[in-house]
Length: 398
Ligand SMILES: [Zn+2]
Image (cartoon, rainbow, N blue to C red; front, side, top):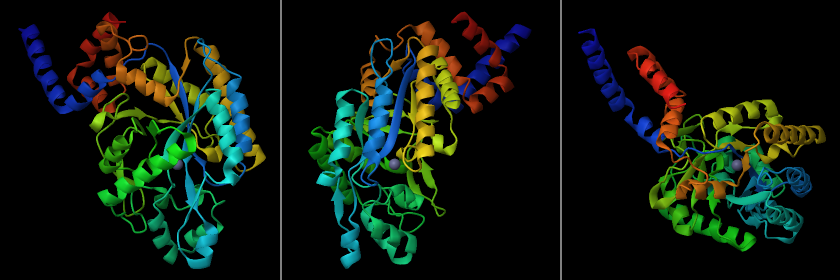
């Protein structure tokens, strides 16, 4: 009798959990299971802006080239490229917006070092944006905001990181808050323009796009896909706008690594923050890598260029933390793989059996382990008693 009641209880509660959480249960099951730890260093905002980027990128290049994984691949830092910024002299003379592109001669040293790093397979260029803002929104904002006006006056050497955060979002008009949506026509035109600009500078269509400030829309995705972009780096959600306080808002459903979106675009999730100038250490990044390795997920580390610019002490600290991270990671994980985000996305999309786990029992084990990391499911499992069969299954498949 007791057994019957127990079976009935697990059946009913299990069905309810499934109905309530089916989206996560199915999405996590579909998410690829990596057979070895993977580390990608993702760095944004390089390109237009301060002049001293080329020197520090050369230092980063040499640092990365000093390491390799067991297959002889060096660590890859992806560079999210900003292709242009405002021309301050034009703004000062007549108040108009004109673009200053990194294809101009003054950016030659920067492009040389980027290309040198790409050839050495330590850099991989990704599209971050034609500008790190929506130009007409910036122009409108400058009318009532002295700081924005001063920024435009000091462009092109001014850093976009110094703009008010909402205005750094390219795919909304944040000159007013809550931000206004852009028209599909404007988005399509701007995407075409930025992909063409990327191609004219780097002679390839960008394979990977990283939406500035992680605010973007379905229209942007469709336009990127139509222009040849295959991969979008996400923080695990798509924020579509900025709210009345300027915060990223309207987050969609959770996004998982290897998930395929419309027009075959593939998503990656970058959610490990490694910004040494904000106090993040190699030790913290290694703890995150450990968790990712346990969950058979890739570790995509986010580190912006601002860590490597600024004072000498700040830059040296960032380089030292990066060096420590790589040194310990290689030592702790003999099978660690260094990949670019583009290569990783191709592996996930093709379900490459050399890299991904095909065995069902092993995938079941990782599925339960990953579900255990979701607070809502964990709570439900404890409340209903499902934690016991889940734990048994975990042992059986270990
Ligand atoms: Zn950025």
